[in-house]
Length: 369
Image (cartoon, rainbow, N blue to C red; front, side):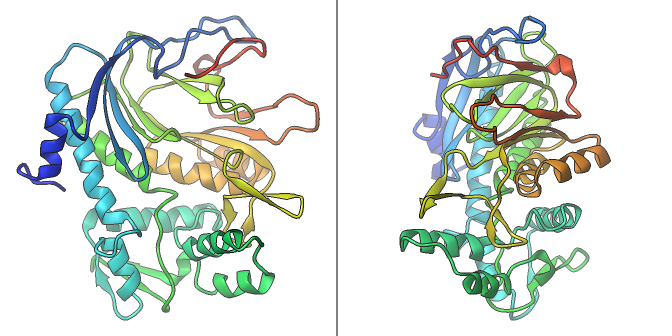
């Protein structure tokens, strides 16, 4: 976390790292559209104030209703906190705490900062609850596929099997009482790319609530966010969900209040080899890209949970994802299977009230600027 005299913090306050702007209605929130089924008026985005920075290889922002000047400083501090968490959790810097764990935890138990340890414990629980569909140790598999893609090929089954010998949360031992983590063997590593943004969003939300802010959005890139409170008396914040086939267009609007949301899909990041399409989301249980769903949007009590489960549901597939939602009523999902040739998208919705979800009419002009 940055100290008050940290130059990164001064960047926030002088505007070099954060851009403050008043957005016109609909710029970052949902435009006024009409639900295709019942012609209900959709909640709309009104004027907002947004503070923005770049962290974790994406744009971050805190979006607020106008009118309370002190909230701008609180939002700046929340974004500063995100930078500190990135420095702790990244695997792309040798001096991060997570990189230190990955280098040394196979030798002996290593002490872990309490907040990071709580996240690792949550990862362990999520791995168990999803039957291994969420796996924070799958970094070596991701690296294998990246290397093979650069070489113009796909991995062999032997390469995948060898790599899976060092993956799986069962190879990480966490001691909550001692505050330590250790790895079963050399080569095991943790990578929080599928959950780190959600965790940082929740930490930013915690800070803003501590500053007595009630109404705001925290975005971590375009895929993860948390909505707190209300936007202009609408019962929450209207958030647009992109069409997974035509990503410049909106597919639906979801009214969120005091909950996290995350979307996962492989419609943008993929490659082809010998005529077959391979997505970037891997099934850690097999080592091969997951198939079946086009996109998954998850709503959950925290952004951490939503972030992890959107990836897990994509891996689990439609039936298992629905089963999970049926057993965890606080988790909602919009699951979009890959359409049959020439057919329209057919979303499957679980645990999201009808009066909060608004699909866009097929002929509506909903281009996202």
